[in-house]
Image 1 (tube, rainbow, N blue to C red):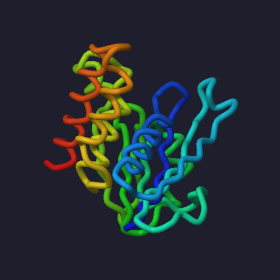
Image 2: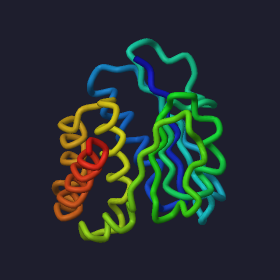
Image 3: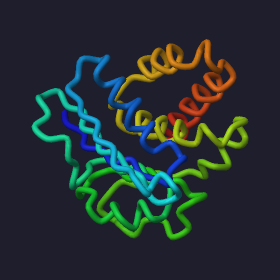
Image 4: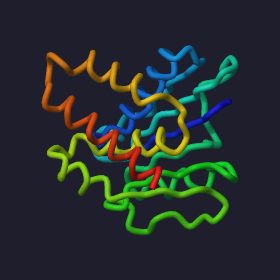
Amino acid sequence: MKYEIISSGFGGQGALTVGKFLAKAGMKEGKNVSWLPSYGPEMRGGTANVSVVISDKEVASPLVSFPSILVALNQPSIDKFASATIDGGLIVFNEDMCPNGVKRDNVEIISAPMNQIAKEIGSIKVLNMVAIGMVIGKTGIVKYETLEQDLTAFLEKKNPELLKANLKAIKKGIELAQS
């Protein structure tokens, strides 16, 4: 089992956080992981991205050129990375920010209005957690319980309301991916 992931979006959408929490959960589950962010001027509104590899074997390189999973939180992310996604791969995208969608028929595509769902949950900050839920709901790459433990350790004392919203967003993403 080896997943090569690119998570990408505008700076501030949480694309790097998607990668961080998937990598941390994979590590906690005893998998080999790498996490390589790419940002700079992207942090000011451009497209920031992160490469993540989660594998049961050693990870030879943290670079991901041809992802098996693409998480695209905005249209520029699809425009930049969708064509490189491997045949049979998975593209998860945010319908609210990707008006042109994905023009591929040799990959699995799941999408949702992540901004709208996040607002309904109570915070736009959780749109990235909807995406994580969709990824784990479709692939089983890591367990929900592992993410729940990580998020709880990170947010329980700092921001319990955001913790609740994050967990609700992940569950909603899982539900969307499995329906």
